[in-house]
Length: 123
Image 1 (cartoon, rainbow, N blue to C red):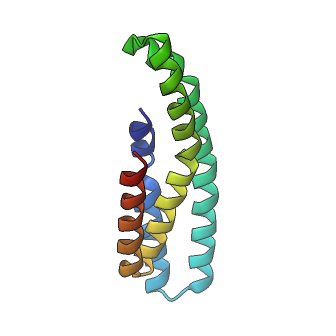
Image 2: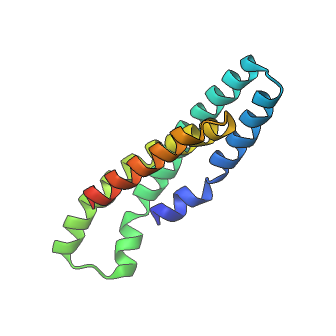
């Protein structure tokens, strides 16, 4: 459900990339900054809301899965940590979108590889 929550907000990446790319193409550097700041703010707000709603859904999801109490306790810690990370995931989408819009594709590639390595090493 966390992947679903973050997937719903995939527009953060696409819209930021398009708006930033348009401003870069027009060489309107002030607008680039405005667009990126707006997107960072929205990422925090939407990420906080999505993480909060996902936290509230924990009991319902665990109930549907029929988890026993010992598994529920162990999974609860993981669920809580993942919910706290949702704003960071949204921020990373915005940063990647902004960097792509600014044509910094090598930075985007390095960040994606680094994020994937961290994700693999921590699961």
